[in-house]
Image (cartoon, rainbow, N blue to C red; front, side, top):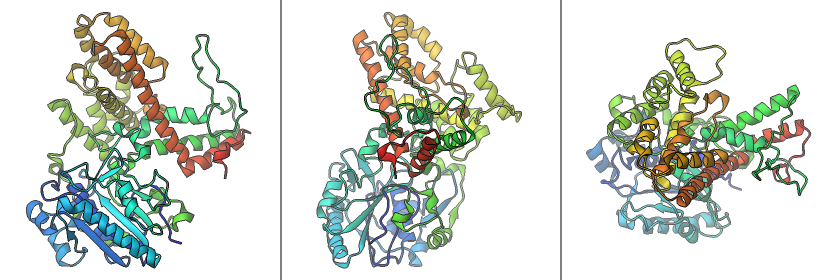
Length: 562
């Protein structure tokens, strides 16, 4: 039986057996494959080509552009995060030394048909030889679960259903595809006996589409860390799906009929064991919320230990040992050291030149983990906030860190505090755009002077104060704003106020205004549910949940046993 990959996000190279058959395809041509455009797909394409050189029984690499033509037009191609040192994966030297498998050139408008033909032929060969088939696809994805292998026609696909349709029914096949919102890759079995949810790109999979709009086009991904508190509360409350409970027990309600917040299952005076197991469980959730979608964006590189991936050791045959042969080959590649000029021209979001500059600088600082620079930059944002509410306290935490005189009793992690606020700002921008709302003051959440905006618009919008209060109360009542963990610092009220400004500023009727507010509440709940689901699906979270639940004398839910 083949050691088949577990469905999930990965950074390690794939399992390749002696008789494995490999088919790979990349969509960019000479026009779309620029280093600051879709050339990242070509970097992936040649990185895998280099690593897998000589492995398996046969390899086919389909591309729409001659590699030497790429080099003549753009120079060497590099793999990795542009804010860090990168590996040179396509160069004349690598080609001349035979370090890369020669690709097959296919016109962009023939790529879909040629890929499907190759998959059909190779799957029949794999089935007859009882060999695993590995598909590697480097391109954009489209909602509707399609790969975009023709850069000039997004509707041509192929869809995953089309790929599955040409597969031999006895072929064991795994798809490695670009994880568009993470910078890593996704590995999924897509044979005809696989479930209908298998085999999608990260950006197009059903389990991702519900929240893919949360992805930040600024950093290429969106962190789940802002949902850590909500996820922990949901999975440790009296109604957690992790615990088997007596049927028919209705949730508690308040006098006006609203569902009452549920208390945690953790005892108020826990034993040492209960404290330890609860903390371990919460930390495992936090790790997933922080890492599920974003960890790849910080590295955008290969790692060579299965500890970095979502493997089930017994199912894949992989253990915690490094993948030595891959690592040695990877380390032999030339390195291009990071230089500030490397990021010139990279596309970033922003509401103007000042927004563009601070976004670029903050993104670079986060990637390089330059917390002091992050703090200095963040103090230039959030106009009007630093003298009201939690502003003075937050400002004090940042200034003390910058000046090197941190309070030893301060529990706030400055890096986590800034990331939480930055990500909430990006989330606010994305949420209002998704609902077709104009950005208040034509600004981003993180840069709008909300007090000035309110003064300007109070006379323009009828019943402004009443509308503001109504929307704010509705969002607050339904727990709309994600709450920070203790390490993420004081609450960040700007998120709720900016979204309220967008809803009220639209000048809609009262009924429509509240409908939009409710739609935003539902969007947020959908995002929270996504992170809860991802946490519960993680093997480490489930195991630590079982240990904690047993320590408090509860019975683990049936679906979480074993």
